[in-house]
View 1 (tube, one colour):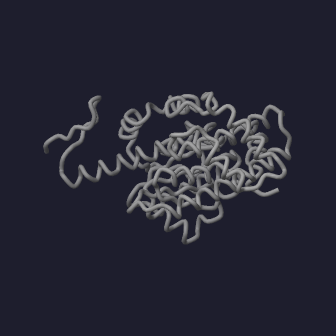
View 2 (tube, rainbow, N blue to C red; view 1 turned 30 degrees about the vertical axis):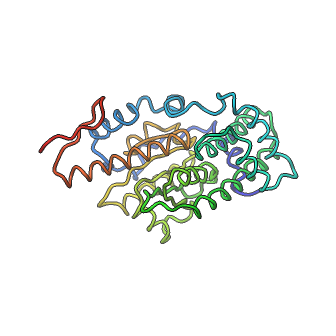
View 3 (tube, rainbow, N blue to C red; view 1 turned 120 degrees about the vertical axis):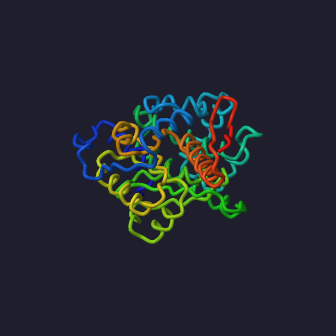
Length: 313
């Protein structure tokens, strides 16, 4: 069994484990953050609402209705489940299904949402004891293989000049790599450049280069026992970007259980799906572009119900 194939299994085991009681006393807590407290509140209200509304249900409802709720995907999801669990299924069959069996006329990122939905359904089945350990192992391994293959296709075809860069990472020891890898694929379909960094690369040159040049950082944190490693990762990112703050977007089971703790750390947003994470990243990137443009022009931009309004200096 590979590390990648235990994502859903480990999530079930860890769901009952409470977050460590000494979270707020960890030495990694910083007083510095991407924006001041008042600026963060304004940003959250303009982008997606207040911190209090950052829950799994509100995020999912705000950004998209899950494909599980779309009747056009009921049959494809059922057939895809059978396909990823069938012993004889090969990668070519999975690729062909994704390209030919989904509802037509949708942007490419719907393929990613479809794969995410299939993974979530498999996780719910495991949680309800309606599928066994072998099904989970086979299913997650096949999904990981498919994600990596599709990512290669998109990255070879990408021709966008100077796209925004997302650094996708996990704390050391994290075995839940399926969703961070899927987020990387979603960025590919949206025209971004991205670097998905392995959990053990925190001090390597690839990590330094990615964080130094990134426009946003996305962190997958699913194992609550890795809170110490998570904090060390945040410290490492901030040490590399001390002169130019980097927006930090965090997702995963442990993150959704520790929203208040993450807000106190200065984390900019907590997301429950790859799509909500990508949408938030796009908003932060646009905000940074707007800020830079305003600084260069010496003008002030005001966001109102009718759109963006530039004020004379």
